Length: 153
View 1 (spheres, rainbow, N blue to C red):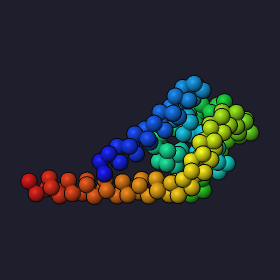
View 2: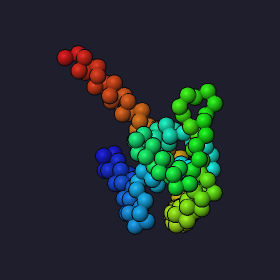
View 3: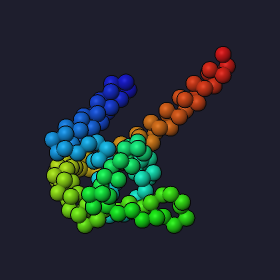
C-alpha cells in the first residue's frame, strides 16, 4: 500500500510541476492560472468561491481581481442578498485573453486526456475523485483520533 500511495502522490506532484513550469514559460502565476481557470467556464464566481475551490489565498484572488478589473478583463456585479460579495465574470477582452492563454493549456490537456482515456477509460477520473474524498475523510478521522489521544494524556 505504501508504495502505491507514493506512486500516486508523486504522479500528482508531477502534474502540478508540469503546470507550474508551463505557467512560468507563459508568465502567469499559479494563482492567476487558478483564477483564469475558474472564470473561463463562463459562469459568475465570487472571490470567496474561487479561493475555497481552487485553494488560492483570498488576498491573492483579491489582488488579481483588482488588477484584471483595472485591465478590463472582468466585471464585478453585486450578489443579491450578500452585503459585500460580488459575482465576477470575464469581459469580452478577458475571454479573448483567456482564449489566447488557455488555448495552449486546453489543447495540451485534451491531447493528454485523449491518450489516457483511450487507454484507461474515463473511470480513472472517478477513481482519483474517490481517492481525494477518501483521503480527506481519512485525514479527518486521523485528526479526530489524534485529538482523542491527546485528550487522554
